[in-house]
Image 1: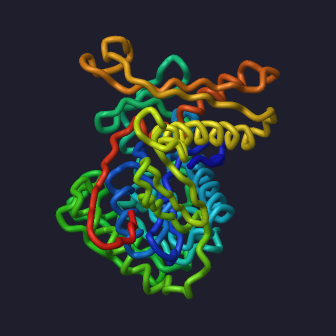
Image 2: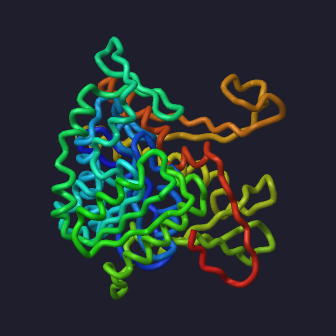
Image 3: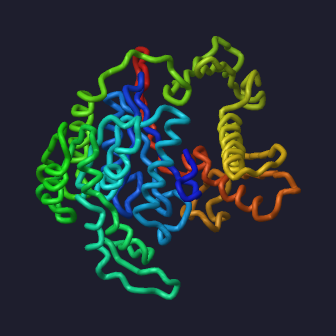
Length: 406
């Protein structure tokens, strides 16, 4: 999903949900220059959802799939994005009760945890005691013609704001940690070559009780090994359970409870009719007459195209509402076909056939050209569009009835 960030840019996030009732909502802040798909973010979130937590992980401004320019950001703008994510959760699901931060993201959650009334516990992974620690990574920054600084971090070349180092050094971080007043879990590896274990010692000694420390033996700073990320997630889930006890089950909400789609074959010897159920909704699918069906409902490809078309229109409408734009209803027309791979100039596949979906979008002709262009661009970011173009893993099971949880 997307939501407005602290500086006005749209931020992209992933909300990981458990299969049953939500025990508590957590907000995850990723490391400096990382994004929400990092090993630490994705696997820690997965482990927490298996323990009943809902986890929002999102890309800070200018990183991952979020809008905006990373070169214009500072630690303070990251804090604004984090506050915006907490507000979005409070509006759409539930205010976060657990904050989790990795590396500089850990410094960020420590910086704002004291001001968020909903937050009842905080966990940091490989976090520096002060944001100023990051300036050691910026020592080789070189001025460039646009007024920014060019720096190489790991294998990435980035432009940063000249205000970043000053902002990092100006944060009253130790005062914030001392005044936190909330349960704190510090996780750190003695082998961390980016943020030394001494930083964890300073955080732990500065914080007041209740506080806990977990050593991530053998782990690297980014938790690149799956077992290290899983272990960190399991430790956070177990520790947070003491401070976030299981609540009485609340009525399920559409945002918090995913619904299985159940497809039953209809006892119909003439066609290929199937009944589909999702929550309180029911509809029928069938094949057209020319291929042996009874045409009692749309075909599977028709439903697939309808999902893409509806998602396209919904995404444009959500974007327009956030921007305060008004326009008459849109129309999306789609058609599926097969083409020779050699006829597709932009495709990696060069032989055989491939599927082609032609999508035609009609918007209010009175819209200014810049708004039309922005809406057409955002259409490609609709979740169904990205699912169809992304790598899909389909897991097939069989046997007695099974409740799917992921």
